[in-house]
Image (cartoon, rainbow, N blue to C red; front, side, top):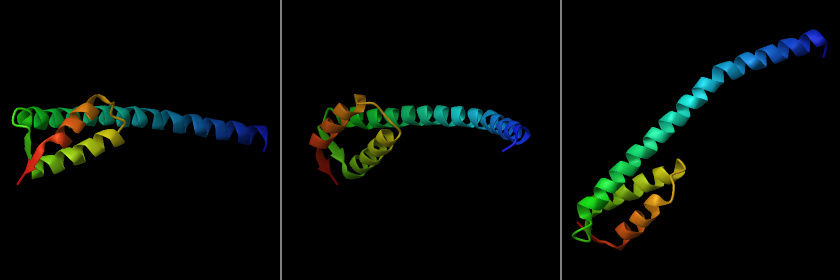
Length: 93
């Protein structure tokens, strides 16, 4: 590889990094926003059912799906305690 080719390759790489950086930042922001919405929805379900210690089956199934999505996005362990309490509730049809 000649010096000219190396400079051209580095220039193209720098341009590519310049294009991708804002995209990566945007994806991270969307991911953080999604985690906040998932956490909020899980807490709504939890507090709505906390007093009765009962949860409707569809709410339980929805909570599990929300929890899995939250954890796959790197959600922290705050919601793990809530999830363990939800699992202890009586599931009603």
